[in-house]
Amino acid sequence: MKDKIKSELNIKQKHIITSDDILGKDVLGKDAGIIGLASKIHIDKSRKQILGITVDCGFAKPDLYVGIDHIKTFGVDSIMLDLDPHHGLRGLEVYDLNGADVGRVSEVSYSSSNALKYIKVRAGIKHVNITPRYIKMIGSNIILKLTKKEAMELM
Image 1: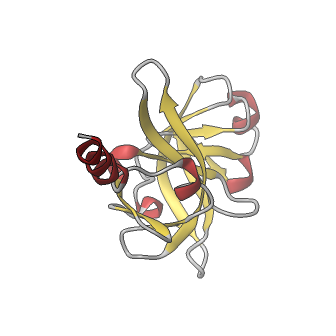
Image 2: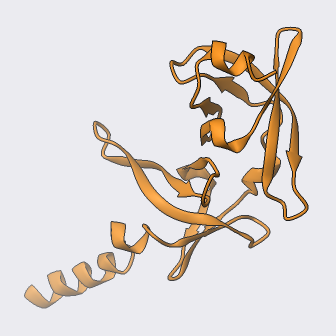
């Protein structure tokens, strides 16, 4: 009986990973390019379920939230995504640091090294260029480090 319990436990443990197996690992986009390093795990404490991860994209770049539905695999050395997040920004809603609606991304500009230069946000009839230094997080929407008023003054 003890042997049966031990073998069942060993089988289950092959499918279990810890936060050490996730945090600090390279996060790769669909095209296998490195996006950044996994820096946080988001957990719904009431449902006891992982919702996603935060990716640290490097110095002066905004963190990127990736929902669990877009994580293809947790590999030994890296985390593979089923999307390339740099190409899905157009059309996303943009919110200020207080949660107020700023507008929607109408254009995205990248440098020759494929780093994000700015997003152009349409706020009513105005357009505002927002650089990565003012972006707090990119996920299913974009959250700024600024208030709406401060963002509108960047014009």
